[in-house]
Length: 56
Image (cartoon, rainbow, N blue to C red; front, side, top):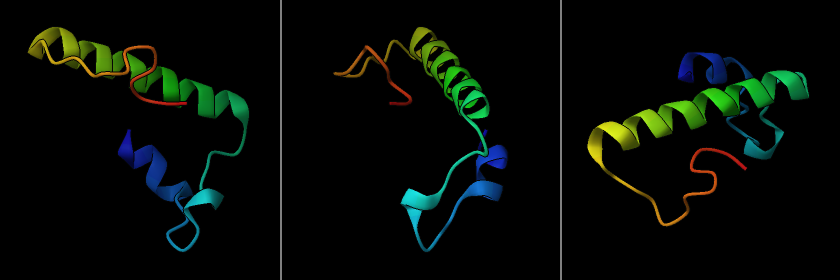
């Protein structure tokens, strides 16, 4: 996932970082949520904010 984000990361202005469209952004967040859930299932680790662990 990081290899997808690094090309669109703006190091001097983090608020200016992002994917070119909402569909790509949503897909990236969905994969992150899946990954967080898989890690949670394997480790038993839970966050205080269970609604959306990965994204906003």
